[in-house]
Length: 126
Image 1 (cartoon, rainbow, N blue to C red):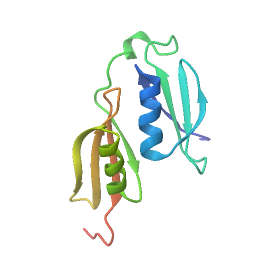
Image 2 (cartoon, one colour; image 1 turned 180 degrees about the vertical axis):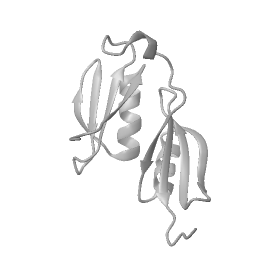
Image 3 (cartoon, rainbow, N blue to C red; image 1 turned 90 degrees about the vertical axis):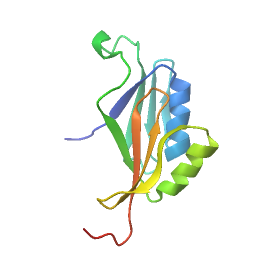
């Protein structure tokens, strides 16, 4: 395998682009009226945002997301939480410590997708 990239279908490319760039500091590598390509500062991570009703998205997949979520592992979930508050992003669950050693924040992106943002809890042991 050479590469894996998640693409999120969106009804509003600008809102989606701003959500992911403000939270995770992605660079916008390509921006058009049907597709936005985001890439991390270190060029190792990519996220695509495609217009939900574009012809490249099969009709049966042009629905609101359900049954999946995207996880981003970051150094400090509480910093992301502060950004989410200041940007008035939809918070599903504030940061909490989990039984499996992660501090976890849940947000809803502008397209209705569940976004899990987690940080390892320092010195956690099972």
